[in-house]
Amino acid sequence: MASTTAMFNGLTGLIANARSLDVIGNNIANVNTTAFKSSRTLFATQFSRTLSGGTQPATTTGGTNPNQIGLGVQVAGTQRNFSTGSISPTGDPRDMAIDGNGFFVVQRGNQTLYTRAGSFRANTSNDLVVAGTGERLQGYGVDANFNIVPGTLRNVNIPVGTMTLAQATRNVQMTGNLNAGGNVATIGSITNLDALTLLPTATPPASAGNSVELTSRASDLASPSSPNTPLLPVGSTLRITGARKGTTDLPVAELPITALTIVQDVLDFLTRAAAINSNSGNNPDGRTPGALLDAATGVISIVGNVGSVNTLDLRSPNLAVVDAGGTVSTPFGATQAQNSDGESIRTNFVAFDSLGNEVRVAMSLVLQSKQGGNGTTWRYFAESRDNRGIDPAVAAGTLDFDANGRLVGTPTFPITIDRNGTGAVSPLTFSLDINSQSGGLTALRDQTSSVASTFQDGAPIGTLASYSIGQNGTITGGFTNGLVRTLGQIALANFSNPEGLVEVGGNMFNAGPNSGNPVVTEPLALGAGKISAGALELSNVDLSQEFINMILATTGYSAASRVITTTDQLVQQLLTIGR
Image: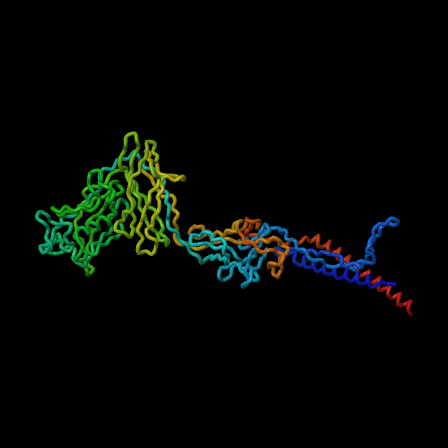
């Protein structure tokens, strides 16, 4: 008689092949889904009805095999294929593909999810989020010095257009040639101011034989045109404008006159205003650079540093007195007694403090001596009008060159500039390198000396304009001022059994009971793979294979239905016999 078992077996075939078609249809539907992973259906037999378990061979009979009739097919499970899809360039740096086994880590509320789809876009907070669904990409941040801080995940934030950055100068390089055939410096410029005297009412008066003393009050100095009129009354201001040092204009300088201002303060002011380095020792002629007073005659002599570029040009119109009412007078008489001499060169460069402020520095080099066949010695003077301290002179020293014109001794020396009151880190200290690998100073005979600054690593304020992501996930930002800084690093997660992940939709996975715990690491580590920026991973669906599988599933479905149809016909015949 007809068996209903065959009908139920055919039914299990219909169900199993229908499930296979479901999987195939899902694969084909996602053929263009970013980083989609195809699946396949696995079949297994159901329990069998055992009519006989079989017997062992005996002396007179052979053994028999089990007599079993199968009860159909069942879906044993689905298996996801996590092989890497093709990498397709997009040109958008926000797109990322993983060439390896890792997963991007994203945050949806308080839930951590994992995905291979790397199409990310920036939200209003400059966080990188999954396009379309908004999960935030996770990675490692950086500290105040732009060093990556591993171990703690955070939202990947790239503030293009809003992040600003400046950098204090730490290194300056200088190159050129100092003319060793020039004249050795012997004298510094001298500017004499007309003889000064004290008012008859000066307290205290000058000692016997002296016209003016260093401790005399500035307000007790008498005007050259009127011995009973104060030259620098209390409340007035001594101002220097339009003076020059070599071919360089000196900045405007002012000294407020108070009841406590003494002549020594005036001398210190003149030295500072003329940017004279008074800490470099006496000039070869024995004179000390700076403003000096001859107490007996009352003459103030302003002695400049050696080197023609350090010749001070200070005339009577450059020395003004502004009284409390704003009236300007030029009561000082100034006479140029001599000019500085000696082969010299002056160059200017700009450094930057921690806030990105420009700090102007002038560097002078003067031929100090020639040692026969042993080379030359040059004296350098560094000054900065942006020095907030008392003296614009910020560095001085000597450089020795051998008979081949090569530097002897330490190739670098520090320059320290006071930045108090600017809000920047103070002092600004940087190293001046005159013998770098890319070039340096030499001292060879030439027509003239020629020196220039070729490199400094500071920068004014700049805005983050672009970024790139390396294979190790490091995010590097480029600023409009030319600086490049590390902004963070993408993190990847590894699983011991990726096929055990639970798909939650939207190309997202969650850790499953059989996936193992995620191991979060940086790209290129622990088999996580590398990141290809500006590209996306394509679906790994093989359409040709899917069509073959679809034909097989369709054939299996049709064959199972034929079993049901045939069984139904047999049942109908059996019923006909019964009538």
